[in-house]
Length: 567
Image 1: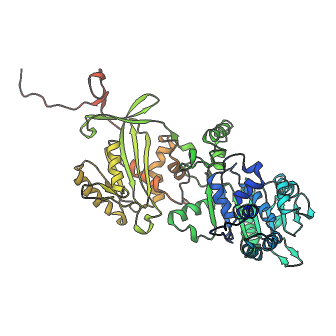
Image 2: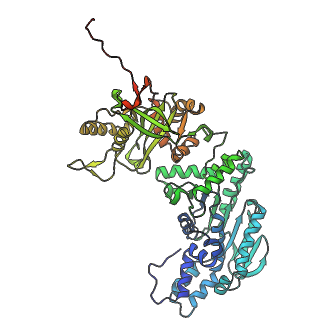
Image 3: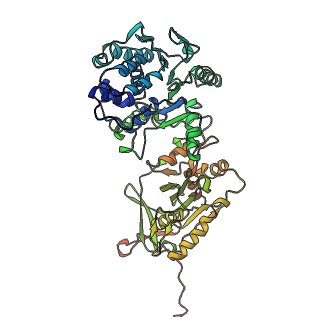
C-alpha cells in the first residue's frame, strides 16, 4: 500500500477518513466493524498482521498463530475492506469534486484489478458463516452502505458472493474445491485468483498419514499457489495452528532456523509465528486485554482435567511433540518454584552452604554454570550466547535456576580507564556475575576454535578482579554430534523425572520438547547440557544441633589435626 508522507492541510474530513481507512486495515475495522474491533484493546501483533495483509506484496504469507487470536476476524475485515474500495469506488474518489488527493486515488485505481478471492475454512459451517458475515455487512451495515453504496451483486448465496462491481468471493471447507477455479469478466477477460486464504486447512485427519499429508501439500503448493496472479497484492495466505508433521510445523521450524541465521527476508515465504506466551509483551501474553494469563491458565487447567494438556500447548503455545519424532515431551519435565539462598562464607572452603528453598523447606544444593557462546562473528548477530545456572540436590536432581540469553554481545564488555563498563556487557561479564551470585563450584564452557577467545577474556577478567576461583572449564564437543551428545547424557535424568525447570523457562522448555533432528536452534539446551555435564550432588553436610549458634544450619565436618601432646 502506497502511503503519503504528508496529508494536505486542506483535506476534508471525509477524504481524510477514507484515506486512513484505505491505508490502515485496523482503522477500517474500528470505523466500520466496531462490534468486532472495539470489544477490547487491539494488540500490537494485529497491527503487524494488518499491515502485511494490506500490503502490495506478492510473497506468499504463512501466519502460524495461537487459537482465539482474531485471525479470522482480520481476514473478514480485509475482504470487506477490499470489496468496499473497489476499482470503481477509487475512480469515483479520483473524480470527486473537492477531493484534493485526486491523483493519489487515480493511481490507486489504475493498480486495482477485479478481485477474485478464495477462502477455505476448517468446516462447512465455518465456511458458510464466513460468507454470511461478509455478505451481511456489505448488504446491511449502514455505515458501509452510506459511504460505499449498495454492493450486492447478482450472485449472493451461502458459498459465493459477487458484488455489483464484479468482485467475487468463493468459500469452501475443502481446498480441492477451489482448485482450478477461474473467473471471467467482460472488461478483463479470464482472471486468476487475486488471493486465496487457506485458513485452518490442516487437522488431525488430513495430517494423520503420509499420503494424506502429501496430498495436501500437492494441492496447496502444486495447484493453488501457481493459480494465483502475480500482480501487486495477489498472494496466498496460509493461516493455521500446527499439527504433528504438518505444513504449519515445517513453517515454524523454518522460521526459527531463518531467524537464528538472519535469513528471514530471503526465505521464499513471509512467516509470522505467534504463540500465546510472549514474555516481552504486556502481561507476558499475546493479547493481554482479551486472553490474559489467568484466562489462559483456566483454559490450560480445563484441558488438563480432561487429560488433554498437550492440546493446550499445541493450540495456544504452538508446541507440537509427535510421538514419532519427539525425544522428550512435557511429560519429561517437572517444575519447581524454589528460591536460591546462600548462608555463611566461601562455599569452596566449606564455610558456606547453598540452599534451594522449596515450599518452605531448605534443600542443600551445589550450583554450577554452563555456557554456550555464540560461535563466530558471522552468526553472532543472529545466534544467542547462553549462560545457565543450575542447582543439584543430594538426590542428584537438577534444578534450572536462571538463564542469561543475549544476542549480538561481545565476549567481554568494553571497559574504561576506571574499569567502568562502556556499552553492553559481554559473555565473560555475565559469566562471572552469575558465578558469584549463585556461589558456584564449577562452570563449563563450550570449547571450539571459533570461540576460543572467551577463555582468554575470562582469564584476563579474573586476574583484573582477583577472582581466580572462577572456573570456566573448556568442554570440547568431541567427535559425537550435538544431538547424540546431549541426548545420551541428559536422557537418563529426563526419563527418571530428575529435571526441574521454572514455569517461566519458556525458551528452554521449547528447545527441550522440540529437541531432535529437525530442531532449529539449541542455544539453551546446549548450555544446560554444559552446566550438567560436570555437576555433582552435595556430600558430607551435617545438620547442626543448634543452628542458631552458627552462621549456617548445615556444615561439612572436616578432619582436624590431633595434638602431638600425650596426656
